Length: 265
Image 1 (cartoon, one colour):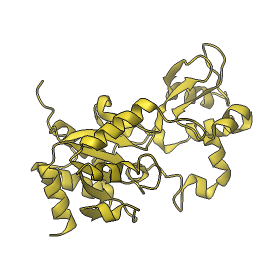
Image 2: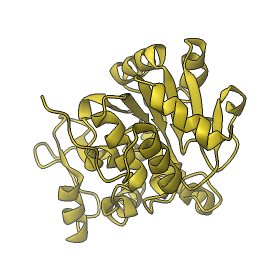
Image 3: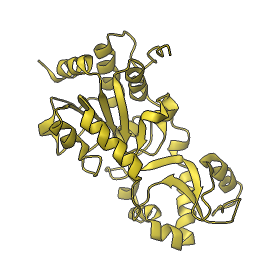
Image 4: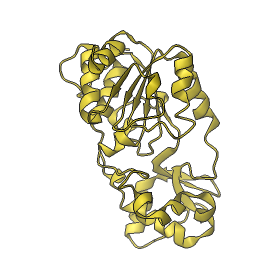
């Protein structure tokens, strides 16, 4: 039995699927990664400083650079790809228990995934937040100000430092998001690891943890991962092509990634 057939059969008989998603899913929507050969941090090592809390808060030039990056990021206009929509199909077929994502682009939500089952480990870059008073709003509001010439936009409520609502280095992850992710791993019957190198913890550790709780594992990633040895099936095909095909065949539908009919309440 080949890996595609094995993965399809696992999806077909699973009812509590946990999707772990990483940068490979975003690159299929035209968003460059950070650490890959063409990644922003690889091409410009200084760019990593914009993601370090102490640099961001203490250096106005770093904040200006961070906001320039945000204002020109492909993530602002990126759209979900067929793999995002295939996960919506799984959800609507009542097979998907949850999504734990390392991505901050918010594309799972744009695709139509229920926010209640999407756990964004590293936050969401489509919102801004004030470091002082906690005021928040759409990132597009700040981008408008940047494009109008305000290169370090301050909070409209208290004039505090603003930032995208993503987790920066030196910050703790949200305990509630972590707890929910661990609970999903404990109860999943199948883990779909999509577009993640499985080298960044704690998300990477969810794979062996779920495996230890009897979950099957399917890995869809262009490169090898440290947990390939746990996988029942490994697929190296383009994510935006293979994930919709697996889901469509597993659910027995003809057109992958176009939206499985929403269940009646």
